[in-house]
Length: 322
Image (tube, rainbow, N blue to C red; front, side):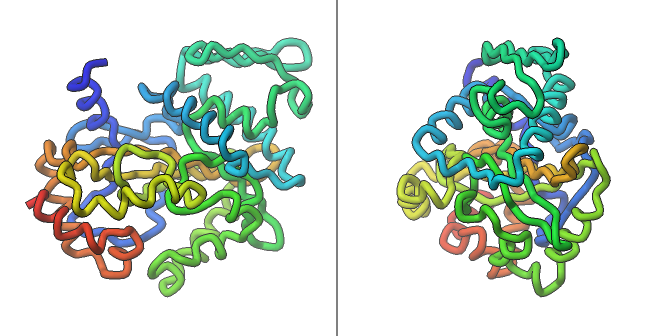
């Protein structure tokens, strides 16, 4: 795919996070899937989204896991949920991409992924029938990061995950924490009760129900892995961003499409995180996005500006957007 075509595709498929000229931190949850149109394209037709970066992103995930196995965490009581999410995810892929099939064969299944050249027979619940654990295997087939929330004691707990593209957090550190503990650093949310309301909403989800929300932040360069675990590799580039000569090419809007699904067998809550990156240079080609982003930045409260790491960058961003 040529660069102009790649750029046009990236812009057309980007899940632009703003619907107005102001931004307020909120749950912004809606049923999923569901097509959403932007001024230049669309997104959200399916829950999983294997796109033109599919093979490259999965290769990057393999490399990250090889260097840092702690990105995959699974407490022992979550193995049933891991098998549950594997079957759910493979079936979801089959309904999304014709290059993938899942066939019953005897007492098991045969998974075929022609994009990756994968053909794997397995028996549901039999760990020995897969080359790796079920959660890891699903992580090798989808671009989304995966977190599994267990529901007990009238609370949600992040007890398993395969997360290689985190934004300023660590799956290894988060594992075993409650929903409330995880969201402690988020501005405003405890003051207005958004996090407790979100947890109650999730605990009421019925089997198979799916919802989604958008979250956005920014990063330096086209870098998916901005986890705390790898801060030594990317932290300096963030510091230098405000003074770099090619600011519009290096500064990227980072949007996460987050899906929340009640798994049908185990009852665990699946939290899927798909990350999309768009350079400021691309944003500048869409006048409506340019004006909207400028307005949002102008009116963001100081605590959210600090939380999103934009305090130093805002003046230069507004100069480009103006």
